[in-house]
Image (cartoon, rainbow, N blue to C red; front, side):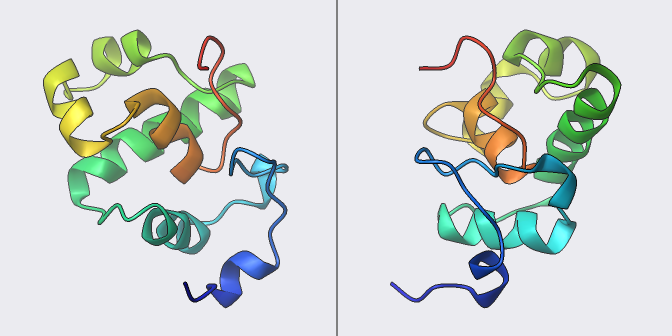
Length: 103
């Protein structure tokens, strides 16, 4: 697998989450999504941008419930957008740490 040069300059933990969320850019988010085989759409960006805003306000990634209650993305759509753990995947692409309660 080819490594994206953008990601070579970013530090990640053992689970693939960025160590410094403040270093995140949309370009890094797109590169993480490619690494995770997750093509991004406008609906993904609704969730990613919300996750970033929540992190800036509360210093932690939002829970699945917070995402679905605050955005117009319901649980079913969230699982389609971010398969395999939507809160975890959204936080990863948004450059945040693993959400509290994620295994």
